[in-house]
Image 1 (cartoon, one colour):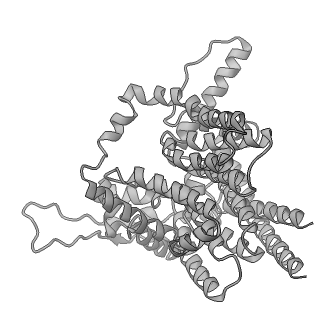
Image 2 (image 1 turned 120 degrees about the horizontal axis):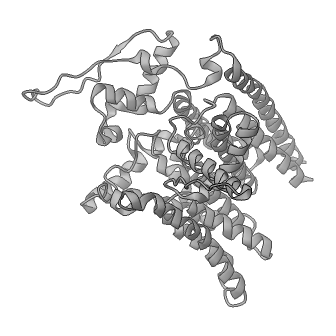
Length: 492
């Protein structure tokens, strides 16, 4: 009865997060990361199979940077879009789906560690108070983060896997996590640890299962490597394109490690404030649940080690995007550290959650590319300034844009005026003012077009978002009620 109620609440959590994300979404993938690139590959794969089946001339393949493996999970959305709505709208559902699935797995795992109320609080904080929310619209990183955490759930949450079907599933999911991105191989220490946990002390008795697990884990990444090479080799190879971004000093490597976590312009703790609790939770969760804590540390450490080799460990996208994969494992550590009700802990989490929601709201409210457009207009669009200039901090820039939107988006000049030290150099170009009116339009279609005359396909999508907003609130209320009933049942 308890497991049924947990699964029912988990389903409500999934539908609540999915519906609320959709309600506040842009219903498009245009200009968002390399999603349009993957759409082209998915459509070409479908065209090739269709031409081969019907005996027509097979068109040339269109390659994308991360290979065909992640695109296989886009094809259902592309097919749905072709049949029902539009490919663009259907693909905008993909990152929403994977993010909602990610936080649902988090909820299920937290329910094994914490009270019902704490599980729901931490899950919703992760969903709306961290960088997960903006990335549900940006469309990057979501598949890798889901498969990585799902693999950990399969490998750690329920003890050792004894049956072949579950072992095959665990192995393939682990391999898929590394195959979702060209750089996914950097996570191998975390998945090697999961395999170690499964077979520690039994490697000889379960030699066949161990061999099968290793092969199936490596298979997805190896299968995707040729298609990744087809994209990178014509432009000089992946390493050649990366080499120009590598640091030239171990001190730079050390500084990057600190900056990725705590930088005021791109720091993980700034864009996911609740993870400040993880700093204190690690030692406690290590004592209580060493296995999941080590997995979280290995994912974090592997990602940090790779990113710190780069002169610019973040890019123009919202916050430290490459750290997206570590957010949910670290939130899980918080739950493992404080599983029960504690007033001090609750107050701190609520404060950090409120700050996180405010920050993530700005990333969800505006298209992430606006800041890049503004920097280009001002003539300050270098990767170094994107990463480290406090004047162009994403949070303050979009807060300024939000204030302008609340005024009705009037023409408002803003001068990104830097302070020269001691004196202005001779011949220095004057700072350029930009008009905030150009960057205050929200990407949330439900808000943007609330009072605008719209028709046709856009009106249909607007209505879908409106219905989703109502359903999302109802599902959330139902999840809260179900959680309350679970807590009451446990007290009886």
